[in-house]
Image 1 (cartoon, rainbow, N blue to C red):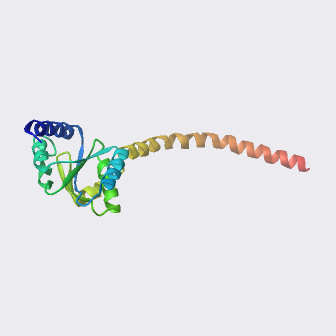
Image 2: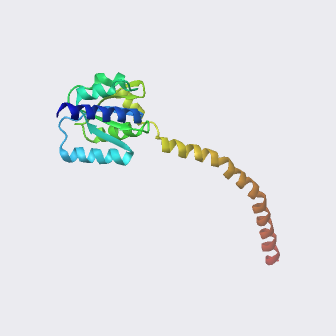
Image 3: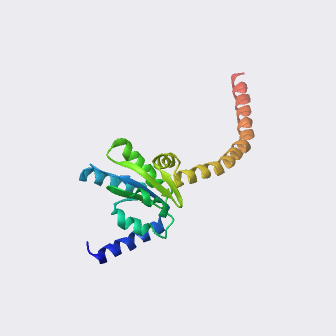
Length: 172
């Protein structure tokens, strides 16, 4: 890799770090090509990216971004999982690491907050942004549903009373 390619890689990584809200640093020693492909597919499905990086160049790309504090995690064979959703990359990485012990979560950064491996795992247990939106929507719709049920209840009770009188009159 020549100097020009390296500077382009640093620029592209820096642009990536300015677009995302979460960076998870992993070590992938021993993963086969098939396992890496499966991991990348799982990341894509979750709305995240997984990229093998060069440590020195990644540390240079981190300069001037919110993730600058995560530079210490880049030792050994590292790869990063990134996502705009604050939870997606952590969930996908932790889920894959549970199935395959060759992927080790080293740490990460959520904005300026540096997370150790346990912090990333705790973040992965949180609901995603879409799940939170669904819960809020459900909470907003619940009162309207209950109100509709309450307003329809008297009419339903009247119908049952009339039906009971009709059944009583038919039986007599």
